[in-house]
Each structure stands twice: as C-alpha cells, then as structure tokens.
Image (cartoon, rainbow, N blue to C red; front, side, top):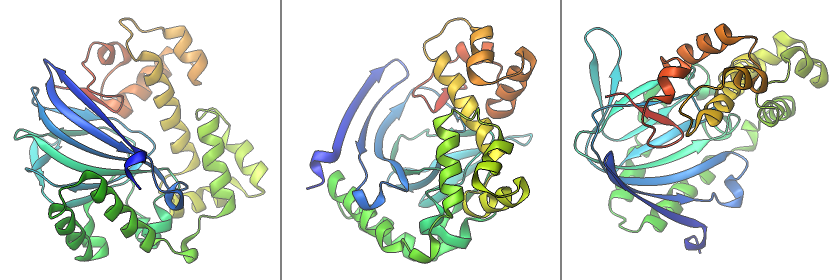
Amino acid sequence: MIEHRLQRFEHASPIGRWSVTVCTPDAQLSDVVATMWYGEGHVAYQRDRILPSGQSQLLINLGPPQYRIEPEPPDRRVPFVDVWYSGLHQGPIDTEAPHGNALLGVGFSARGAYPWLGPQLEGLADRIIALADALGDGVLALRERLLNTPSTAERFAIVEHWLIARLSPRQAVHPAVRWAVDRIAATGGKVPVARLATQTGYTRKHLAALFVHQVGLTPKALCRIHRFRGALAMLDGATQVPWAALADQCGYYDQSHLINEFQSFSGLSPAELVRQTRPDPQSVVIR
C-alpha cells in the first residue's frame, strides 16, 4: 500500500492557503527520485522565484494554468498547462499562479534523470520543455489518467509505474558519475574538482564530459549549486547575514565571492534574500 508512504502538510497564513502531500518514492525509484509531491491551493502574492536546488523536475499540471516568466523586457508570461520537464538550473525561475494551482511534481536527484530520459537529457540543463516534445504524446496520456483519478495516493502510484517502466539498464549512470555526484552532495560542494577526477581515475575533461552527458552540468557547476544550497540553509529564518560563517562554512573565498554567487543563482544579494518571504526552502516571494 502506498498510503503509508504519504505525508500531508497544511499551510494557512497571510501569503496563502495550500496543502502539500509528499510521497516517499518506491524502492525501485529510490536511486533516482529525491521526492514526489502534490500541492494545491492559492497564494496571496503575485510572483515567486524558484531557486536552483540540484534537482531536475517532472511537473504535471492538474489544475488551472501556471505561468513561467521570461525575464526579457517586457516580461513574457509562458503558460504551463500540461506536462513539463525542468532540467538542472544554474539560475532562478520566476513563476505566477494567479488562479490557484494543482500540481504533481517529481524531483530527481542530480544523477536521477538519465536512467529514465536517456540521451534526451543532454542539452536540457537550464531549460524547461514541454515533455511531449521529447518523449511524445504518451506523457499527455499519463496526465489524462491522473485527471481521471481522484485519489492522490493512486495518482502517485500511476506516476511511479510510468517511471519504473521507463527505466532501462542501457541507461545506467556511469559508476564514476554516480560516485562523484554523491561525493559532491556529501561535502556540500566543497570537494575540489581536481580531487574528484583523481579519485575516479579520469581526467577533469573526461569526467566533465561524462557529467554533461548523464547529469547535464559539469562537476564544477554542481559543486557551486550545492554550496549555494548550503548557504541558503544557513540563512533560513535569519534576519541578518552571518557573513564570516557563510564564507567559511560554505566554501566561499570572501564576501565578494559570496555575493556574486547569490546574484548568479537568485538574482538577489544575501542581504536582499533574508528580507524576502520564503514560502518554502526552494523559493522566495518577489512581488
């Protein structure tokens, strides 16, 4: 039974009312899926900013249109109405949900997309695509099944079966990539890339090529994201920026390096970010 793997959370505050149900992945997916969730509700703010997380996302819209904001003057609203894939990102993504939301998501670990996407993964970093463009109309049939299934538990089960059916032994992640990805995560991105390469027995260039093919980003880029996530965790609930502790514990050379990395990943300085409302650890309210 899948019910024992579910946890439901409710939120009600001036910034909105919503519920999120989180599902622990089936054992067959535990090596590739970091989290599965279903959220629905309404927010009182206009726009939020999703920050780089080191995960890629399968997003299935089961409610009203959501909008991704293309930051080109003037802003352009791109509707999201069915099934999308969001690759590993090195920058922020602004979104709006003016009519509420009902969204099922699967978050894949950094090495979790290749086993079910295979060669289609290459070139999807820093991109968001309609998944049917890469995999065909079968993904739209998956969404139709979910729309006709009222039970949240059954919806998770359907998505799990779909993903398990797509796993292929021919798309196994290279052992060096698997080890290096896990090592980067374990060290919070503070392991030197040269050391990673040496310990895998490959040159930095060859390891980087393997990463781009099976992860989507280079080891250096993934390390930067993990350091940023570590810094974000330290700022959670903070009202002031602990500059020295952030630089020391998260592997930044100095305050200037820290600020530049935050600007790159979030479009905000650390001082600006601590003043923003954060609906969850992955996002901040922009307006």
